[in-house]
Image (cartoon, rainbow, N blue to C red; front, side):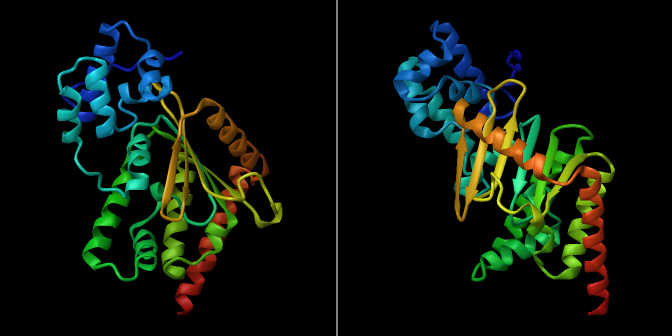
Length: 280
């Protein structure tokens, strides 16, 4: 088992909370399971809080103050976390994503947020929120592009994405936007920064046909699975559920085209979009 990573308490309020939670728990002679049980929290969830993977909620902070005789420490510092720039259903997943060592994702309809170009992201938000002011769209796009900055590191996190063929064929923003978006993915795959596969229509029904799936692994905390629907999202840490989702992803990978064949298809579709854009 990986040793817990030493958090720098000065790096962020979440790191401070995690480090203090671990310190006070160990000082009280409690295991992660023992601390979590009376609060109806799993030991793995406590570990994710301590490692800064998950965001502590105010009601949890109040319970930790009581259980660990912390005299309001956790409530006071939990308030310093502030409001996330992401929608409520995705905020915790986005924060976990930024700390993950490995991310594996199956995308059934749209290019994953980490791989979106500015024009593609803007088209997604504009069409999904037709009555929202342009200033709000600008903020949403900026937050999405900021997520992609984690790929600026040459090796971490390891990102493995399976794109349904529908992602390639659905025109978001028009042929020019699609050509740029797919070229961006092809470029990252060519540079071996990401692993990309395409699940072709010819596969038919498959294990993940009912929705998207994101798996996140960490060096110092149990893995997480994130399932997203229309305006909703669920972050799961139950070991049995996560293992089941890992199997689902493995089966999707087994049905997908090889990385080489997938890259060739992505480039071919991008070229078709480029020709279409030129004709217009």
